[in-house]
Image 1 (cartoon, one colour):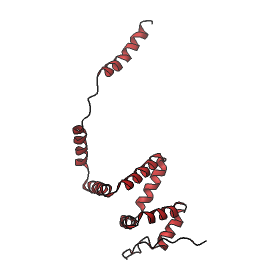
Image 2 (cartoon, rainbow, N blue to C red):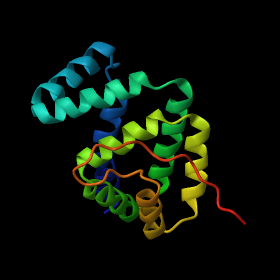
Image 3 (tube, rainbow, N blue to C red):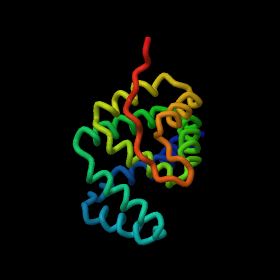
Length: 157
């Protein structure tokens, strides 16, 4: 029995010792680039197109926009998976054409107007937001080309 325990310990420790003596091969950018290229070649054309559009949007962002996006992604990473899934489902429920129109119109706004909208919308329920979007002309009317959002209106007290 006395020799069995050290033998078992040695048996279980040998794989650990042999792994520690092997140094991992340093990864070079070439290896990463090859893996990335391999993954891109496996992607469907539709996914490649979406990736290209995302890259173009990122390239067109200024430093401040990129920082805001990093902060937003950081907030998403802190959320529970259920909350993230719910947000994604809500996003997917919006017609892609409407999403594109909303984004284009948002990007046309001056940064201070965007800030005013964010401040205004932050405390609203989803129903109130939908009503404001409709009332302010932010969402396109069905069958009509959007004219752009109305100017920001402050509530009179």
